Image (cartoon, rainbow, N blue to C red; front, top):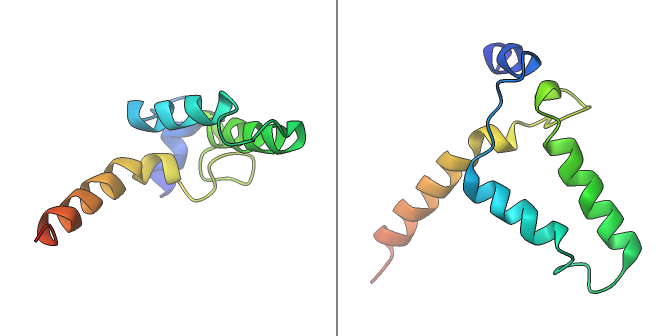
Length: 85
């Protein structure tokens, strides 16, 4: 984790394109149902997660969700394949 935080502090904290698409969909208002306050909260959360220089801190992606996203997707794909039948 310290190495990830150090790289992030230098601006190296890439966002997986699949995660970017999720963020773009949320930012489009699709999930807020027209509720401006809900959209504001969604946008604030995404802004915090995307604060790439603060990854691993309370000002950014505290739990490194963006860093781990690809492995989450890969694990889910293995689960799906295992339980396909």
